[in-house]
Length: 264
Image 1 (spheres, rainbow, N blue to C red):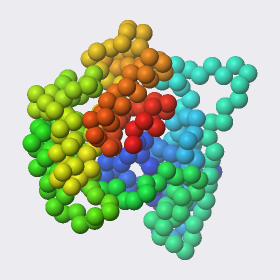
Image 2 (cartoon, one colour):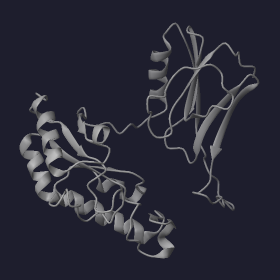
Image 3 (cartoon, one colour):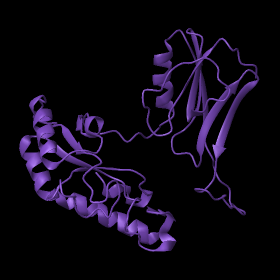
Image 4 (cartoon, rainbow, N blue to C red):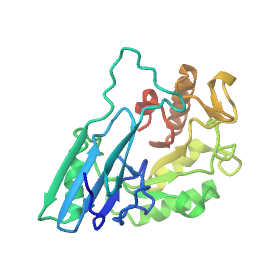
């Protein structure tokens, strides 16, 4: 189809936005993950794929049409379907008139997820990464916890304080069984955080370790293969460890599906 170049276009982000979601002019090389919107300010066209597709999907728009790319690769390998059929994605398209692009986007994103996993109550609090960038200590975390607790009035939904990168013994790598010299007693820290009035959370990267299980479990140095059953067992053990310390929320990057339910 012919696409007017005077429209403005918005796309999603692969994982989360970093202040980069914006309506911009047509850029044929621009990748628009998951869904995209095209608007002239009065009429908004929206198109996307439902959540949970069997591919990494993105859109591209140029004057001659709209393209949907579906990356089916299994990591760096091709998918061998043989006689099987794969439902790659379910595409939804909608047009909106008489409402702002914001309200159009809000309604359309609701259509893309029929079974959202919503929290029971709003999630809020602190995360020390965004000012410490990995340079912190147990005492710093307790000061952050006291500060977050002091400005949170709710008695029924207390705030979180998440310990981000910087506590592990090997920089950003596991094994995730103990803290470093600045975080010598992780269970005590979780207990002390609770006493300040926050709920303790912790960040970890389960697939990144300096103690590989075996050469066959590694995709590259220090990075484990999540399809290896032995790796999945290791990750489950790591999650059980940090939960046993008293951390009620685990912000784990690169987590296999079979281990997700063990984080809270």
